[in-house]
Image (cartoon, rainbow, N blue to C red; front, side, top):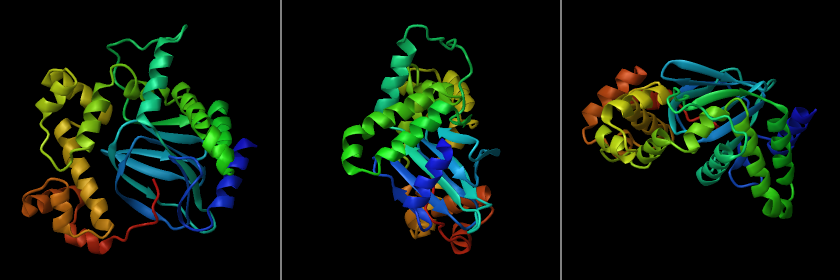
Length: 297
């Protein structure tokens, strides 16, 4: 019943394709009625919950498909290809995107780590990957419903919004994606911090040594843990982040040269070669063949 109520709240708020603010900062609802094949995108730390239809994301060749049975939790910035291949007017994609506030998630993760009775993950355990799928449990469903309901009234949202959002964050941290999220935001979140550094400096040269030093690891240990968390080597990840960012900028109307410079490429010929190697088309061919879909996570 709660899922149906959430779906109704979205249908009442979103009449056309696109994203709409829910009334609570960092929470948006969306609707898509046209199929879109997977295209380059950058996922920021967020949770996406689908109430109707399904969404697809590809991370370094690994496919993640999520719908009303499983939500997606992205705990770190990730270069992906994302699409809505089955959306249609008769069966629209309806969902909610919740941005994960680093300060609040970190505070909660550390509080949970120090709470009495907490079962801690061994320090040497393999790092969970940056994208995880989790089943909708009762705690998540009820917290999401309460969060969207409070957004219907500006006064309620102003007074209760942060508390309802914190409640949802807690449900996420306790759910099936919790291990991934706690490792990204809690104590020992070195890889997540290095990715945050990289994401804020895409137009600069950031070396592996610099990233490793920032989190107090040797190059070898950093390389191993980074690949565990992202499925890619640091060099592959940096290249994917830059090219995906450039592709989304081009799709949004930026010229090829502007996009290349904006993500740190000095040589336009190198940018074109690497772009074609990744996407199978030159940047100009790609820009002519793609139209930016309605904005969705």
